[in-house]
Length: 220
Image 1 (tube, rainbow, N blue to C red):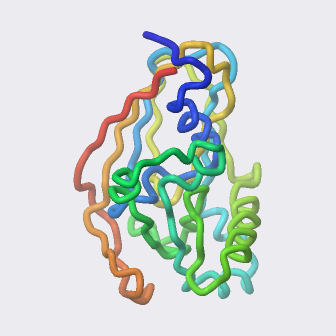
Image 2 (image 1 turned 90 degrees about the horizontal axis):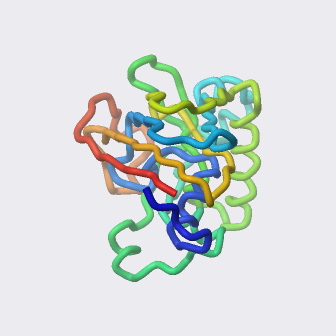
């Protein structure tokens, strides 16, 4: 395959994947499961790290758990790209992916455990000033991605990994952008969503079934 020039706009998205995130948390409905397959991976760098957001929630102190229980958080598709100077989005792109709002804490239906639902796509917290919300999200993300919650995968060609985006954050690690790296991802969507961000948290839907598949190819 072809290697993209380092300055190519597509590389902004690839570099943004080095932030902790949940796939398509900025969509309504968001992603449920993702499957990532290494097709042609470099010998150095490019690992993927995964952070368990159920364990991260469990480790929070009780006062913080009470504070965040009913917080509603805005997720925006282009937030991480904007942070890296890639904010050259058309009006049509922004209209196609408007901000969505999800509870910061939700219950994983398969296990009944509570989990955080945060990451780099989060931009605002309803009811908080932007600056305060941004700093709070930054500090919470640091707590939620401590080494004791994290698994790092060293890729080999044809490795396959599957995870639940509703309770897992992940990020890619740096690699040589001038080297060929190809991975392919398949993601599923949850079965239902609710666009009314003013609905109280207790009325938010429970996601427990797969609705559809989306395939993505990453090549640099």
